[in-house]
Length: 172
Image (cartoon, rainbow, N blue to C red; front, side):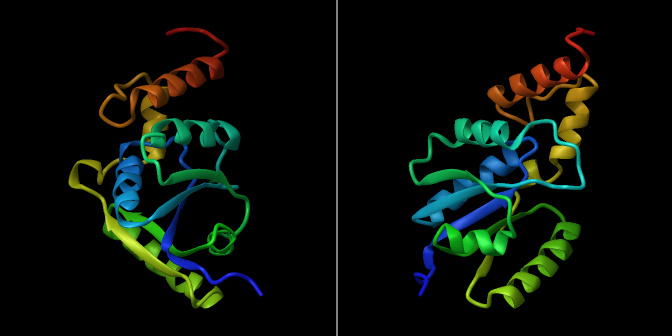
């Protein structure tokens, strides 16, 4: 028999392509609510990634290292199954907009259907992060915009390096 999931342990999943200040704020706040927070780094098969899953795990680990009760793990399964694998009972989700709410509500109900013991806890994005998305950050990086208000310095450096590599090492 599998161990009962722990309500003091939460799982926060995402693609984190790249991890940005909005994600980090949810992680910081989640680390204050739960005894242990696992950040699950997954994939989106519908998108061509900027970074490999290993690179994304490493980048997330770098920016959450200050939180002693946060660990980062890659996953390639349904999030509702991964939550059990890490011994959690809570899925932590961040909400930015009403469209996020619709999508997250549907996902939460589906997860409850798949595993009725798993609960979802939502944290509202702080206003200053509510417009940030990884897709927009990749566009800003690709076209040479200012990333300082969206990502920490180590993520900015990784993005700029990757954009340069994608251009064949040519600087603009």
